[in-house]
Amino acid sequence: MDNYKFKEFLEIAQKLNDIEIIPLLMGSVGLEVITNMNWEAQDLDIHVPGDKRGWEVSPESNIHNWDDIVTVMNSMDYTLVDLHEHEFVKLGLSVEFGIMDTLPSFAGIHLNELEMHILFTEPRAISKGL
Image 1 (cartoon, rainbow, N blue to C red):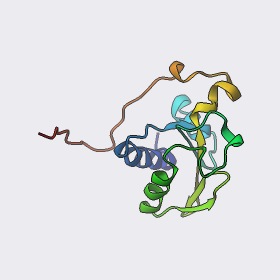
Image 2 (tube, rainbow, N blue to C red):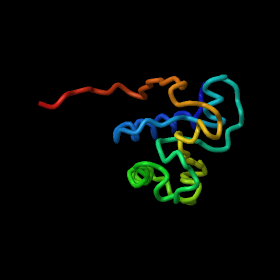
Image 3 (cartoon, rainbow, N blue to C red):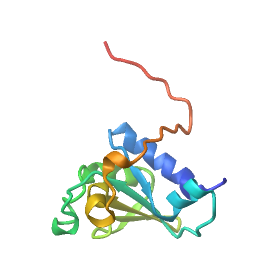
């Protein structure tokens, strides 16, 4: 499947992994990857660790490491367009961040029930410091 939104997710995920954030792909792009069907995804929905109270907490602090995520997205030429929705845009692609810790309360899905997939977009050297 040739899905530029999924490829963009992989690039964002790799940058987030570099700062020790493991993202969760959600929404239509996630469905496209799982089902190999076109769901006509309009945006990219990425969930990251945050406060399980969700919207009860201010948007500046309900996502853990928000400032680091903003830095990563800015480094990839994304612009924050809506703080409340944690939405960034680049070249017409909207990327919105949600809080994975709210899944049990809003979707009945517990994080320990999710599968982790390790994907690399390019070979990476792994080294240990002395």
